[in-house]
Length: 115
Length: 115
Image 1: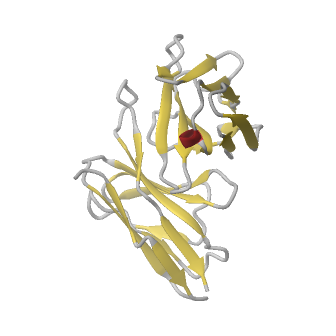
Image 2: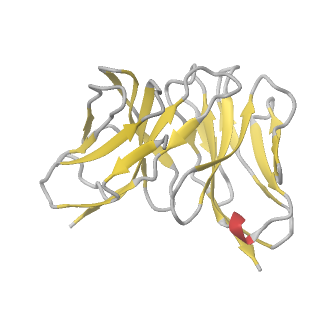
């Protein structure tokens, strides 16, 4: 079954803890993205990666880190430096190239709550 | 940087009515894509419709159509014969810069279809 798998669905973080959200894809897409969604808000870009071993900061990268060691995987670590991490996190991939089949696919998301 | 503005935080219509959601954007690019995504309570992001900026013809997908006014930088979504299942958050999104930089989202419109 092709697609994007995010895990865990729900995650609770204690103050001062780092946590990692997993994103795995079998769509063979080069580009992958992490977005954050706060209540009543649109999605904001945290980090993105256009190719293995390369990634770029998005609009709200502070307090987050990523790695891209494999094409299929793009994990997001929420560090203790992120002071307000409670949000819904979405991973996405892109078909690549602006053509008629241009599509961005999203995973089902992960809820992160600070306790 | 691009910006996307959705000026209607919430809209409510009766079932079977037609509703139009507004979206404006700001960009200096000439080649880009615009999208409407639906996000039901499950939080899954579902692509509704896609418009290529270089195409003058407005995109349509069954009951969904857009009014794309490139000079005015306007991209509204029309839902005809609205159904209860159309109740969701709707996000307008911009993709430019060759595509790899990800999407820029508006803050969304919460559409409620009343029985």
